[in-house]
Image (tube, rainbow, N blue to C red; front, side, top):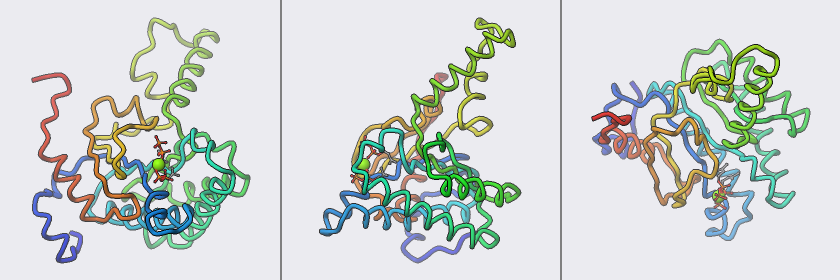
Length: 248
Ligand code: IPE
Ligand code: IPE
Ligand code: MG
């Protein structure tokens, strides 16, 4: 059982024996957090990376099975080159530190997205992180990197079309499960809860297929200010929802 700070214990509603299996978070609001402090946007990304570390560790401590975070979208390349390279630099720093501490943290890490445009060094670090943590059995943390939900569905459609063209399957036999099996998230349960901080009320191309029946939680808190207590609030809100999946 995790040890809570007094403040966190005050969040009474979370039943840790009834957690969602899979929580997904759109880590948004880094730029605005920095702007409010008169800092460059990159300082917001650095603060956001720290928040990620805290929240991922917390998820492992409370026994969550899957955490998926949106770190960089297929659309984020539209940002100024200096901001993109600062984000990639922070990712490198984070991965190097994570690799150093992996035996202690034992968090299983996976990357979802098209890693091909990343530098060889970053790609190698991502692969190494995945390989080292393959056998860890704690929380699995998926980092969506150069991830776009529509891009992911197009890739799946292409792969299925190619299998049809090769005579390996018939178009009319394709099922939802077949499409799911061709997504980056193949084998993972769908997210139960999708959290978006920063006050924006949209998905921004994050897990659109997988979130078809997810519960959504929005908060104005900016990602660098997101705390374990904020996550507890989201979990409590989730536990108060009634999921029907189209039934009664
Ligand atoms: C999210 O924070 C981080 C990335 C998209 C990489 P933003 O950089 O989008 O922060 P805001 O939305 O401008 O505040
Ligand atoms: C979504 O945030 C992407 C990540 C958090 C990585 P954005 O800041 O890119 O989304 P929009 O532009 O506000 O929709
Ligand atoms: Mg944003």
